[in-house]
Every structure is written in structure tokens, then in C-alpha cells.
Length: 126
Image: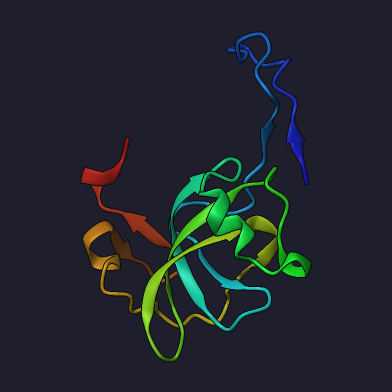
């Protein structure tokens, strides 16, 4: 896990702010799960775990990721269905298959591109 040191920034974080964890992936990246057979497009990123304790505890202990890492919201799919997934950084890998993701929500938020990454429609950019 990489921690970015912001003390040298020309616009430093307020005093007492925790270091920011580096996200390895970006919104629009196509990823796949390291263990389970699904892929998806990242549509949001939490710098650390931000789901319910009940959700976290439902993960088998031997597979439970640490909370102090980025977590990604995915428009996910497997061979049976499309759904939304919440996945820790340690469980994601780059999907370099070149196959498109066919989740029905993707077109509402993204334009597809030929380089294997999806680009947000201008209306969704900050």
C-alpha cells in the first residue's frame, strides 16, 4: 500500500489530516476481481472503507480485506447477471481482455473508448 506524503505540496492538507492512500485505479478503468469471476467499470472510489459494518462482517474472515485502503464502486457483471459491486483495492486487477462491459448503467454515465477505458460524459465531470 502506498501512502502519499502531502507535506511538500504547495497546497498542503489541513493539520492533523491522515495521509491520503494512493488509488491504483481510476474512474472508467475496467477491472476484474482477483478471486471471483466478475469484471466491471469503476464509477466511484472511496479512499478507505465506507460501507456498513454488517456488510464488512458478512465477508468470510479469511477473505476479509483491511479497511485502510481504497474501495471501488463497480458496474459489474459475470456470465449470469449485471450488478453493482463494492471491492477493495487488494482484490482488483486490471482487465486487459479488451472485451466491453455490457452493464445497462454504463451508457448513462460513460462513453466507451477503444483503449479499454470508459470516459465520463461531460455532465458527470466535476
